Image 1 (cartoon, rainbow, N blue to C red):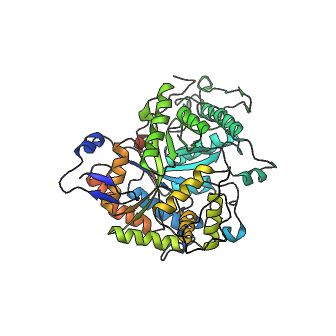
Image 2 (image 1 turned 90 degrees about the vertical axis):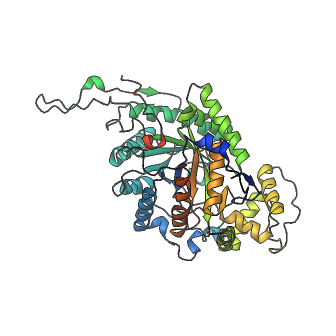
Image 3 (image 1 turned 180 degrees about the vertical axis):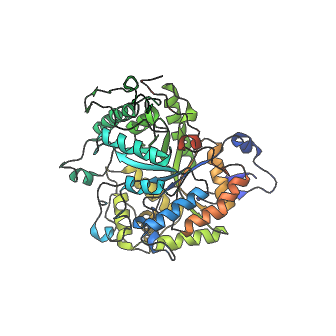
Length: 466
C-alpha cells in the first residue's frame, strides 16, 4: 500500500495495488514503543469540556487508576507525568479556562499507581534546577523498588520563570547555567544509585551481618554545583538505574540527551523535522561511544481517531471549538508576538508586522493559517488547544503514518496525547492498536517485567563494583 502524504496530518493517499514492501522490510524486526502523556491527562485546553469527558481527571485518583490499568492492558510502555512547579504563566482570564491548574505531585501518584499495576512503566519529571540530587536519587530508587523495576526519570531544567519565585529566586536561572547544573546533577544521581553493589545485602542471620561494608561506596562528590557525600540510604534499584528520559530540543538539550538520555521525548511538527532530529541526536551519541539502539526517540503525537476521516476531523473541530476565545486569542498573540485581540475573529489572519522575537515560531503560525485557510478564530483555537504533531484519521491512516515514521527513522515510537478521556483513549486502543498489532508493529505481550526490558535497554553496570 503506497502512502503519500496529502499535506494534512492524518490524511493519506493510498495506492490500489502496492503494499509498501520496502517499508515492511525495514520495520520487520522493529516495533513501535508507545508512551502515554498523562499529565495533564489531555494536553488540549478544551478536553475537559468535551461531551462525556472526565472533567476532574487530573485530580481524581479513581479515574487515573482506571486509565493506567487500561493503558497497561493495551501493553503501553509507560505512563508519563509531566510536572509544573508553578501555576501556568498566563492571564487570569485565560488561566481560569485551563484544566491543568491542579494535579497530583508525581511521586505520590506514581507510587500509588505502582500498587495497582504490574508491567507499565511509571515515568515522572523531576527538575535539576529546583531540587537536590540526593532527594531525586532516593525518590526514584524508591519508586523503582516499589514498582518492581518500572521507574523512569524525565530530566528537565525547568523553563518557566514563575517557578523560580516559588523557590526563593527573584530571577530565573540562565539557560546555559541550567544545563551545566543538569549535567553534574545526572552524574551525582547515577553515582548515588551505584552506592551499593547488587549483592551488598547478604542478610546473614546466623552471622548477624546485614550488609557487606566492602560492597558499599561513599560517593564523596565535590563539583562546581554540588557537594554530596553519600552513600544513598537505599539498595541499588532493580533496574540498576531507573530509565533516563529527557526532552530538550536546544543545542544544549540535544547534547545532554546524547550524553545521558535513554528515551527522548521530542516535539516535531512533521516527519522531516523528526528525521533531522533523529539523525542528529543518535549521531552525537555514536560519536560518544554509545549505541544508537540504546536511545529511543519518541515524539509527542496527538491522536484523534474516527471510523472515517470526516468523523475524525469533526471530532477535532468540535474539540477546538471548545477552547474559549479569550484563552485562544491570548495564545495566538503570544505565538505571533503581536496583540491579536483586535483582529476580526471570522476573517483570515491579516498581515503581521515583523518583530525581533520568536521569528521562526511566528512564521510557522502564519504558514499554518495560509496552508489550511483558517480564520483568526480557528487559528487561535488550534493554538489554544494543541498545535503540534497530530495524527487525525482512521485506524488505517494513523497506522500508516506511524509505520512511516518508524521505517524512515523519524522516531522509535511516540509519546501519545489523547484528545479527551476516556473516549479518546478507548478509540485508540480499540481501533488503532489492533491494526498496529496486525502489521506486527506493536507487541501483544510485554517482553519482560521491567521498563528497561520492555524498551529493549541494557541494565547499566555498577561503575564502582564488578
